[in-house]
Image (cartoon, rainbow, N blue to C red; front, side, top):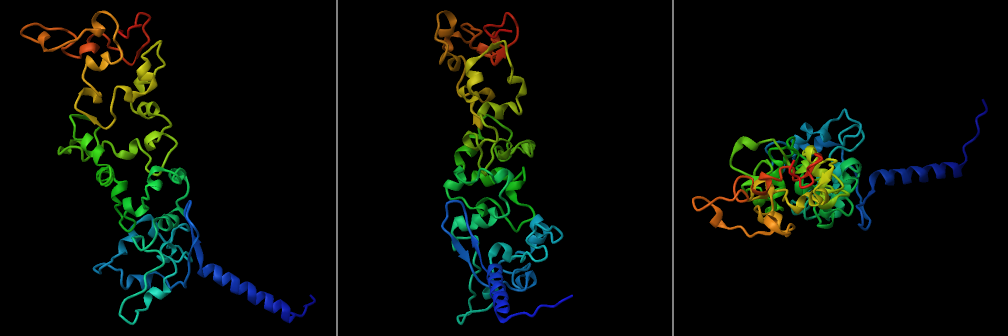
Length: 330
C-alpha cells in the first residue's frame, strides 16, 4: 500500500472543518413557527450530575423528578438523557456559564428558562423540536398558538404525574383559562367531566381531550373530528343513521338543539320543550299553539307539557327508519 504525503494545505482544511463542527455542536438555532431566528450559544457542561448538585430534592428549584418521566429514561435514544444528548441542556441550552457565580453572587441564567425570561415561541420551539408529529401536527396556527400559550402553561415537565395528562386532574388545568366551560359543567345536565360537581361519582369518566385536541385540529373548536356531528357520533353512534326519515336540524349540527358542556334543561338541550321545537315548527295545529301553565294539573293537563312533551309522540326525533315514521313518531 502506497502512503501519500499529507500536505500543509490539507491539514489546514481539516482544522477548519473541525472548528466548524465544534461550533455546530456548541451552538444551535431554536426556532418556532413564525418566529425570527433566535440562536442559543454557549458551551455545554459535563452533564446532569452537575445540575443535580443544586436542583436536587429539597432545594429551591428541584428537578430530580425528571428521572421518573419518559424524558428521563437514559435507555431511550430519543430521550434528552440518552448518551450524548446533553441531558438537561438538551432543552435548556448550553449552560456551562450558568455554573459560575457572578461577582454579585448570582448566576447567569441558562439560554432557555421556560418562564418570562424566554420568549414563548422560543420555549415552544424547543418542545416542538422533538414533539413535532402526531397530535402536534396542527399546532402552528392553532388557537392556543395564536393566543401565545406556552407548553409549560399546561404541562408540568419535571413531574411524573403531569396534571394535564390525568383524567382526574386535567379539567382543572383547562378551567384555569376556560372559566365559562367550568360554569357550564356545574349545570343540571352535563357531560360527566371531573370537577364539574362535588360528587365523586364522575371521577375518570371523561376528560376535555376526549372531544378536544388542545394542540390544534382541522375541526371547529379544536375538536378531534372534522365536524361537530362526527365528534358526537363517537359516543352516540345510535344517532348517526342513516335514516329513512331524517330530522334536518339533527343531521346538520347537533348543537342546533344541544349544548355540549352543560345545560339547565334535560339532555343538554339549549331550551325547554315544547318551545325549543316551536323555534322551527310554526305550522298550523298543535305545533304552533302557545302552551302555558294553565294546562298543568289540577286545572287540566296537556300531553305536550308533561313527560317528554313533544317526544311523547315524536319519539324518534333524530331520525326514523319506519315506513310510517315520516313525522318521527316511530
